[in-house]
Image (cartoon, rainbow, N blue to C red; front, side, top):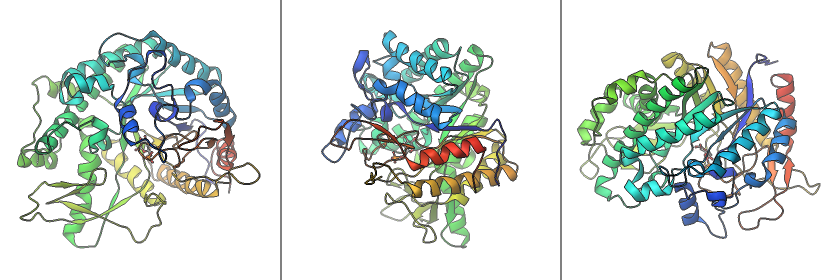
Length: 468
Ligand code: BG6
């Protein structure tokens, strides 16, 4: 029987633009996430306007979280609710909303675990100066974070800086790079990434200065890659895929420096970001207290040589990009996949947790892990999601095994606490323990219905582990 320690943080996750709705209520400004959801919206795909309507249902939703037995709830604050245009006037109504949510969580015995920025940069910052390309965005983010620490830091002890910067930076629309000319894209992308690292470093230091008991760390999209064959170049390619998609970012957060393989690549391709003298110190002095790990699947890579048509460093695709001179993403024929293509691999989680702990020796918490798939309401009005229970049970077992291996894993917050808007694939792709009665094009009654996985996870939490 896999029993976890009594202080293990059993939780669940969400993010503001995916769960809240009320996208322009009480003074909230438009965000990049709103903008992109409107670009993709249509009869087949919902947008951020209502989402799960947590903005109006938060009391009911938090009582369900209490019934579920959550010890911690990982959610994000919408920057554009606090400062609608990103760097101007503060919106008191936005602060009031999060005060109500935080107080309600605490009253229900649930610890708030707050992400400052989850894919939803205020759109005005893009309009003003192309967002993260400009260093003004660093000061804007720092000011916003300081406001959050001041307003909520008496009750919120655990913070995450930026959700999945390492994934966000690969996707043009998440940074709203619509207006950047193709020939400048990789240079601008590298600059945005670097500026976010500097901003994170400042914010981690500010957190420690303003809240001596505060804990803060990055939330990364993990990458675990198998070589396509035992050929040494394929093995190297798999390692470089992990390095270029995640490890370089962890090195930057934890050691304040790009590793050699990464700065060499930036130099060779001619996209080394412009840096200021003081950055070096700021980056080195940032001290994350933990690493938050988001894990869904694993990848396979083979070596991809550059050629006349594809010079060294040419990128193809976004999230799972290929990189000429380094790696090409392949399919793993040994694994099954969700209908959205994510290859299911609990053992990969055990491997990646061991890797990160060995390299960085920081406590870790899983802040995302889950199965995205359509759920069908059965004739009895319930949602029998045994497939989700199987997925989560296998991953919880992998967490337990990693802890036995010596990894310091302090908590598990699956994605997602309830059904919410997928980051780019509408409402049909569901992850939650709680069904939200709406479809992409019909809001219905937004009723909350606990799924079978809700009652199963409730038992896992009470039992402090899997019930075999
Ligand atoms: C993570 C994001 O990358 O994956 C979440 O942090 C997102 O915001 C989750 O929802 C699942 O991805 P998707 O695209 O299925 O919603």
